[in-house]
Length: 167
Image 1 (cartoon, rainbow, N blue to C red):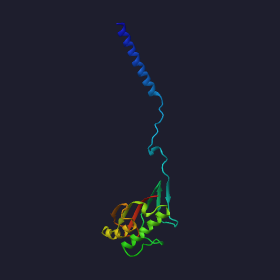
Image 2 (image 1 turned 90 degrees about the horizontal axis):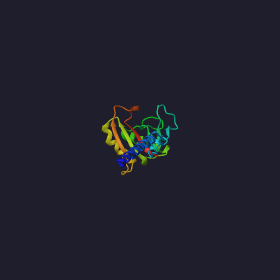
Image 3 (image 1 turned 120 degrees about the vertical axis):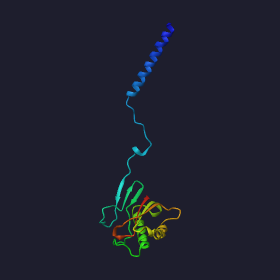
Image 4 (image 1 turned 135 degrees about the vertical axis):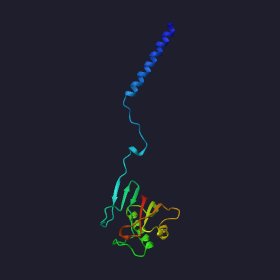
């Protein structure tokens, strides 16, 4: 009987000691666990980039966030901000040249474009626009793209294209 009584006493003290130790462990302030995720990293720097010439519109030509460059939509306008003549093909060519200039001025290039959004005043002109558009990219490096028919573009343009590129 004494042996059983001792065993029960020892078992009770062992359980009590375990519960006390666990309670003390829970009440101690924990050191934060180091994370390898980006959530604790410094957010990437954001730069709002504009062309050297004054722009009457209320937006930046591009915004750089980390290693990405987001271009505002470009139209087929010349250096005087007038739309080029000649229809969808001429406008697309000028638009792509304008995109090339913005990319290069900000440390990127057409071969680093990863996504484009094309807005067309007449979606029926998509094939004619594509004939010019594809000449600006290598066949095996075409960016992801969306093409939308819209009810109207600024200045009565036929096409507007915005892009995302890496730097």
